[in-house]
Length: 288
Image (cartoon, rainbow, N blue to C red):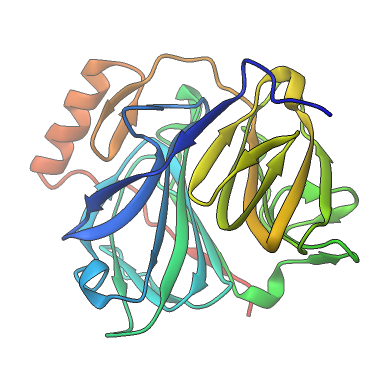
């Protein structure tokens, strides 16, 4: 039986408070894994306790990277300082290219019930950090689903075989899959060996290349595990499978600003404090 390669790491999620007091499970952006080029942060929110999420994420800035928000259960409203607004419901997703600067908020549109979802931060190369900001926003039915006897797979970014998502990243070639595996069944997959690759189990448990993995664990793949076999446990398993091409550039980071040098961070802070932060209007591309 295969075993996990020594360069593959299993990292438990860390519970942290974000926004105005939202409890999230953090995998990337924690002390255990500050960055995983090109990925800067991965947060998972999952709670049916309103005290964990009701405060939301009031207006805050971003510059220098992309965010991808994927809602599984519940509703989250977003709004920015340029007049854009929208509602992310179950199964929907939004790609936000903050680039030169966006000030936005994300607030729950519910006072009770289950709220589940992910937010992933993806770095931008220096040549694109000051691009015009953009949004792409899609409902659940816009994302293609692959069904087999063993698993059901939703393609959120990039492609799986010949199946393409409506969102494609031409800079870091990210792929993002939501995979639900039937009890005792296998999911075989191969990711590009030159990419940064990881899995996160958020329902159930299973075995990754022969090693037991439980819920809320991030599996950071080593080069020898880029082709893997995940076998679901007796209750099945659900996981996100994410891959991206490293940028290999210096990272200067201060809160919601991610640039290449300290001087660029200082400029971002100065722009924000002087109300010169938002330079370009962002428009939302939606698929109704």
